[in-house]
Length: 337
Image 1: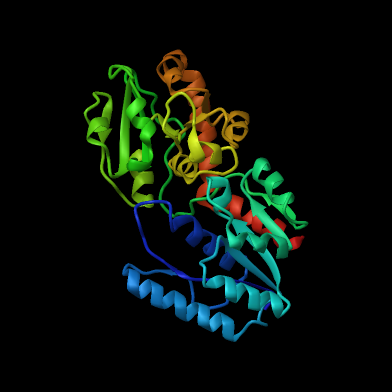
Image 2: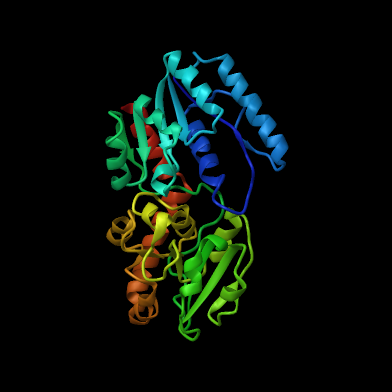
């Protein structure tokens, strides 16, 4: 076997936890790579999922010499570290595709980071993350750009309407982990913020510009938000900047919130300090702001022609995201290094 990958089961959940990893496995299979354990699949029961993953890991350990190159989605589960070590000791070349780096999120040193030292190639999110990784390994690096959202669902049209007042924005995620929402004070006649996710704050829900829409699976979110004007990508406790550990992390990572917006064909509003702000700006994918206080005025000043151009750009990016183009390009490049 030329290329193999650590495969596992995932739970279909109403957050970004499993969707990107499942899609990476899907693209690896499309590129001809083979699962080293059991096939990738969704399993609803957490106990059944854990048993499936343990069995998949055990099968991988029994056949450590099967692949010349092994692709591992980083960070692996703790018990998978032993398996990866056996694969490397058997002579496999290691390619890492990074989802998260806990040290960059403010956590203490993560022992899994020693895999960077043993990797031949590392797929990172942004140039800033690439620089961080290169300080710790001699491995070659490939910049992903943004995560994909592979789906067969119908896509929206690029000329979806830009409303008269109020403009409609949406934000999705674990709302308890978005304290900046409590700092917003937008005029309800100019901005309507649709919230999707779990654990909404009663204080936030009482705000006149907020419309809570409940929680849904990623594919359902794409359909539910396709007609909105913008998707909001923000983190931290402040509306003036993206602060704290998660705000600092935005300087390095590619948030799946950005992917979710573009998968729906919706332009985005992002923080100017995030690592992907140049990506958004250069491709006219939305508005780049220093503070969320700017949003009502920026929306007011936006012409219909400018918005249509943003929507068309978002539609072009949507075609790439929903077909796995970024994964295909990054994995192909990393496997050829």
